[in-house]
Image 1 (cartoon, rainbow, N blue to C red):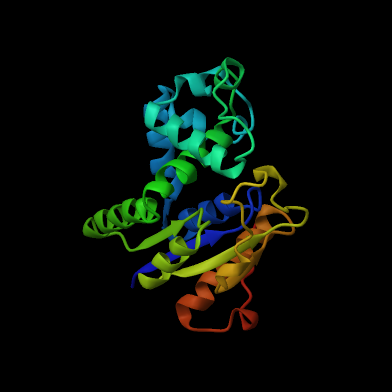
Image 2 (tube, rainbow, N blue to C red; image 1 turned 60 degrees about the vertical axis):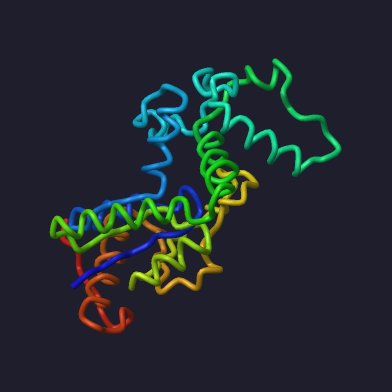
Length: 230
């Protein structure tokens, strides 16, 4: 049986942790729309994709990601987007703006949305669909996608027979992502389940596996309880 799970929620809610638990205990393949995004940014700026994925560095500005080093098409897309958003301001092409160190999260947000999604709103979903099909041909059948942020991503997942889980965490309100359009708690997607990350990892493991096993067996998760041994 094929299983495709999409995870949605604010940054820091624990989506990657939930995915890692499914990988470790239920043999899921962990995927993200941001996998291809990081690969493109890494090639465009001449940096390592692993550095862009480092949680400790995502908010840390670096000269390696200043806009003077950006590919021309990307730079033009960002300038156009910022000019449209603030038409009363001049196009931000001063030396100071071009040489300002940028954090990975900001560059990834701009590349993913202002650049690629502006070209086509299915840009990233097409790449993801191709990856899933490739793994299916290799015999894999369980996939968890860690970063569902847009309506068409949720729609694509459900059209493929997938389910959507919203991951929540006390005090996690999206402030880490700023006011960017990609920041969402996922509630508007009407998730099939809400995973409350409100205690420690062991408790979260029980919540995640209970939800998965219950859905696998066609049971109401409220009537299933798994005890996780130490």
